[in-house]
Image (cartoon, rainbow over all chains, first blue to last red; front, side, top):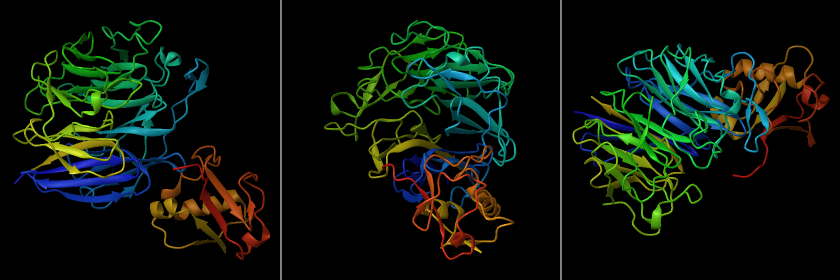
Length: 371
Length: 98
């Protein structure tokens, strides 16, 4: 029988939530790495028991943990992230120049084909790759060395590379996104990169239509249709039908189009989910009502999903890596909040229940559907 | 034998119970002590000092005998009481909130 494993990263440790395929009774295991910030945990699609976790701390720096038994036991592996060659400078918030400095790993992305290969998106923005199960890391420096690099500047959370998407049909193609530089695409497995931000419009930057400088919060792709991308930008929900060459706004009837995560239904490539947040100043839901919005039309037409979610006095946020889906039938949708709740829907978003209510602030949620 | 007392975060990370007793090659300095510590517990590499430059991480502090040794040079001899094992070297996280 199928089962589901939900990997939760929080401000003070990691948690592993498991259930059988009915998704009604949940076992909560953790905290792992108690006291440390766990930015992201993700499993290999090739070997689901191979998990990678980014464990980080302002005091003690970066640790990468690896599990080979689905999160029961963990081993610290390589944590040496050294930029390749001269690092140069990027812009600081005030426009002054600041040397690139490694701070932490925001996102780990295991390879689609090899459990020992894994990518890491880091702050200050760069992409690293390991081919030995995270024992050692090498930068793919062409991204950081892109001619636009000196103009990149951090978003409020830091200059982070937070999204890594591997094309399911073309192993040479990788998409990444950086706050606040924007989205980039490689057609040669990371040897060169092209900005893919045409159509993005950001009124809060000097040139609203700039080639780079947009605060992209998250990009999602359905594995069956890698040319179609969905983006939650700082403000605006966007869609591309040409692998990022051009984008169109699909915010439609959303009550606010600011937000962080965006996710695609496991079986319906045009069904997408966002969590609208009031504004970039007020990082909480509109009117204190936590709502997921679903579009079954690939954007523009949205419906509020509220059953089981708090509709009064709710002022949590849902961060960019904190939403995921399972691939059961019906599709399960999961998200975690800065208030420590992890909500699950086993009917594609129609109704919601909390799996847990009182974890530390949730930074990331990934879901594995196990045979 | 030099005795090292680590902050709980690092003991948990390296799965250390209690204090650590270390033999140091040659002169007992911060550098030789941390070299020995990281050799025995590779999980601690990069958590106390930078991998490449060996600079102390900003929120890590070293104390012994009631004195702050955080800003001593890495190759300066450790205090005699630490070198002979009668005083532990404390490696702790700075108190900076949360």
